[in-house]
Image 1 (cartoon, helix red, strand yellow):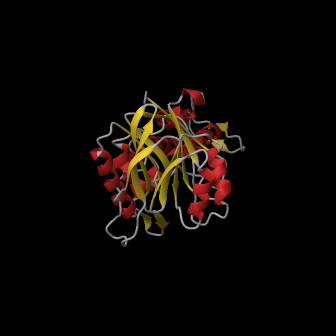
Image 2 (image 1 turned 120 degrees about the vertical axis):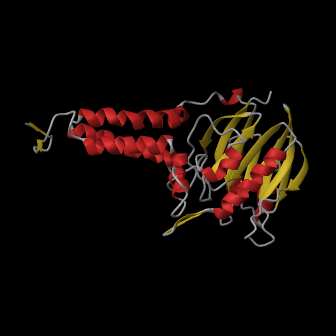
Image 3 (image 1 turned 45 degrees about the horizontal axis):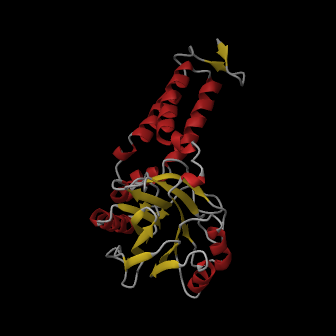
Length: 321
């Protein structure tokens, strides 16, 4: 009889013990690969899983450690399934991005927070990344004037509609509000804009959006307003006649969340980088997104914290030239 590392007896051979661990490994792999098959019942359990899907990697590490402690060959072989699944889904995000001068455009996305006590410092921090475009959400008075003044020298072109705005090194035209308001939200809610950026690579339709928040409670994930707004935004992108499109926004959802399906089915998301952006104190998910059509979001990363509860994210865009 073989003894475990804690001195207790291990029953059975390495190929017969550890069946529970093996079963949990198979279940974890199935959740990773077939997360879309998990129904959105009992509090949107499917979307809740997808919001934190990369964190199933922690479960994989725990299963691997337990299999080693159990000295179970069966569990060790089984844990290779979720290892392979996680690596396939997320391993590429760890690869380094290209040098910044190889990007056609660099863009920054940031929910600056309507409770930010240092808008000037926030604006300067974003400009230090030297992006071509800066998209901001939760712009309120009188702080809006501070952002306009601080960014004016480096970003002479800007457009603001409602509480969202875009600052650009390149000329803008055709700016208009974007109707992404869910039916249940009162009039006066204006958190989307569309404008045309006249870049060195031609015209680019730029969308800036702030989708409704989701809430986690005892009944699960409440995301109906966010999902409805995402659907309206997806329809606007589908109807866009300008070839290249860049979407920047606080979308209150991860790219794995099926609630953003109307967008992720039509646009490219980041090929490299995790860039968890929320909450700033201990980021667990990226809900600040940069997406593109007829272009590639080659890499995304977070920038240092500002006075917001979100971290800014910067992305390199290729494929425009």
